[in-house]
Image 1 (cartoon, rainbow, N blue to C red):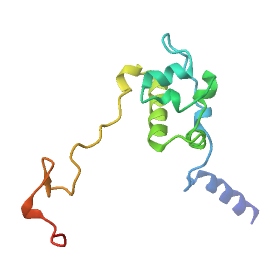
Image 2: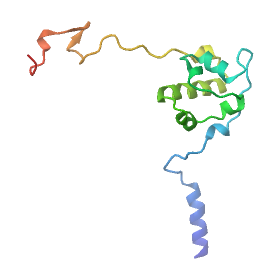
Image 3: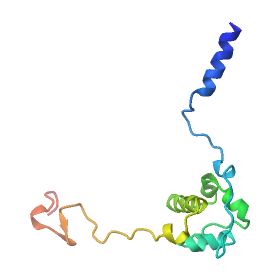
Image 4: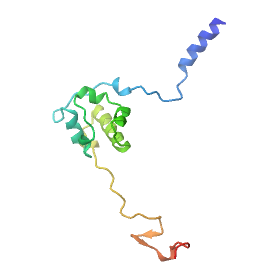
Amino acid sequence: MFSVLGSSSRLSSLVPRLSRSLVNRAASRPVPPPLEPISTPSDFLKAIGRSSETKVTIESWDEFWKTSGNALKKSGLAVRDRRYILWCMENYRNGQPIQSFAHEPKPKKAIRGWGPAVQNGKRIRSRRLKNQK
């Protein structure tokens, strides 16, 4: 009986977890060395753009690279900004130059409407809504 329980505990350790853990995986990753033009977290945030330096205030280089998405969420950062900053951090950690991955956000759509009923910014008369007169 005892050997059965022992083997089941070993089997349970081999089965993958079905839920995400809240462990900060960024803390276990290596901290990249600061390159010549970038020596502080604020320099990095200025280089990636989107006025990120005004949204995040972290002073030390090591603390910045151990920051997780939950910590950015608790500081009140929007989802889109959080994802962009973490994505840029991962690319920088992998050794890519900032100019190759930093970009501005997508512009807003010029024409907003209900699809084919609006063409070139004008509503097509034959597609007029029947409940509005």
